[in-house]
Length: 118
Length: 114
Image 1: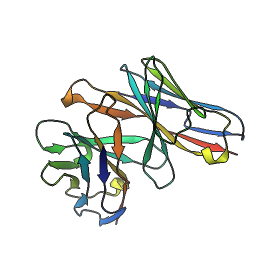
Image 2: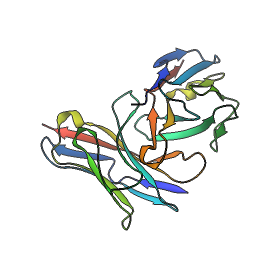
Image 3: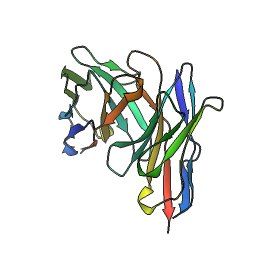
Image 4: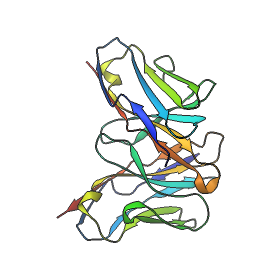
């Protein structure tokens, strides 16, 4: 089945630094990827939709200058948290749309990245 | 616009008992519906989905769900709970649009009692 690899799984960084999270589709091409943020004991909140070769579409309230998304190839999307602050600490999960046609339509999720900003 | 409501943020069942997790959706167009399971500090794993065809969908680990259009529901069931089923469960809907992004419910924490 489709596999999405997300790295790193955990990262601790100092306040003011930037962190890059990678999301790779290993055995399929993903023209569309999604980035979510999840707070403890809560659901997933869509941050942005990433399309290969074009600018990401951000959800309302998400700072595009803080959360930089790049989708330069059909198998790689990256999320860079710039000038991170403690309030950016969270669990970030990527997802890629996979399958062709209604019967095969689906989404595969990465294993998530736990970001802690100290 | 689309939305998902999961009734019951916490559900507890005894091992061997029926599991029923409720999900109702709202969508202005025919929806695609999904159930995912999440274990602590992990991503989401697909349990099952409905996109087209038969409305009773069987998934992994003995779970199944039935799409009921008239009730706008997609409840998840399992005849006999196992200790390993303890996890967070999310129902999600994907409606029409060029991106077809998923909208998640608030999640249900399932506890299985010995």
